[in-house]
Length: 231
Image (cartoon, rainbow, N blue to C red; front, side, top):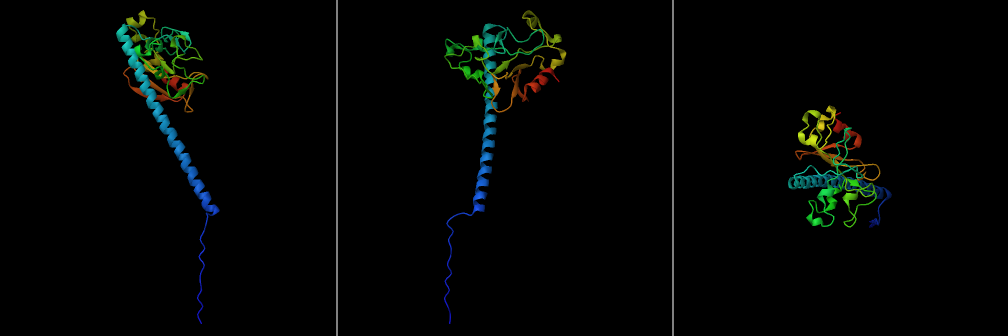
């Protein structure tokens, strides 16, 4: 006598704990990878923009010099004090402020740089907040109202390479140990204390040279100063 056996098939209605943990682990890994990749993309884009902005400012400076038949428009060191340029007798490197000559506050469309945001690198943050068009005034820069976040350097020279133009304008020669920047350094991103800080967790210094080539040289002021001094 045969008995017909019916096998009941059980259908699962959910996931086991192990399966849920595996899925969660995969999602976590993907999220971490996504954040990392997104961060790298944002950093690469910011570096590219920063380099482009340096070149735009340099074009403005070159145009200003050509039309005015004048020296580079340096006015402010470290965003606070007045200096015709930053090459001092001590050989101290200080940034010049070309924005006073390049940006026309009264009529931005008439300036050599028409958008003041060009003076602010996307690699840095101004904790006090970026200025608005209404209150941006590079002629009255201060720690809390910076003109920008780039350092524009007078092309430094060692004593043997000083020209009559340098002498006539009071340019002080830098020590021979700084020959690595002899007539070359033009611009870099600028970081100072707690009023211009890195946006991506570290200082990023590109340098724009007089031949308009750009190099990445350091991720800290210490390393940047070593590069400038030729050490």
